[in-house]
Image 1 (spheres, helix red, strand yellow):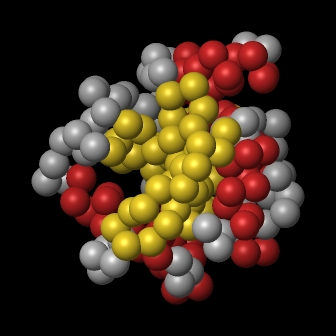
Image 2 (cartoon, helix red, strand yellow; image 1 turned 60 degrees about the horizontal axis):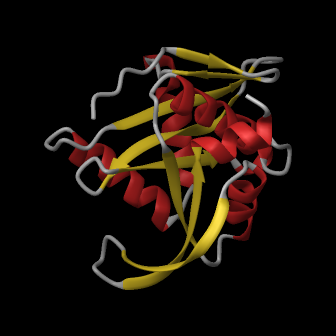
Length: 174
């Protein structure tokens, strides 16, 4: 799968853009505060993607009203480029404002209209209540639990979510 991503996507409140060198301090600060296994897995996926066919599309989330760095979101290919997973991470002080939902819907719009993807998945730790609520409110459907190996080769249950192009178009009248 060959993916070309635009440098900027926009919503009413957010600028969803490529990272720049100016984002370095924000990312370092963000990573210090995050003790998430999912974030560690994503970071390893990004590093490993340089040596594989896996594609990772990361975007910085910027609040239009004041230029604040909120976090990031994007897409990553899985399973030999046969599945595309979405991801999202926000700084704690921006939780509960709908920014993750807003950014994911824009990522879905781009993925289905421009990349011509058929479906997007998300694997979310069962204890991450906020994460699976964001997935549902973004239009994804809970498909069941999935036993997944983490980076330490331990097995853990993840919740499996999916949105396909038809469901997205029907929900958001695209």
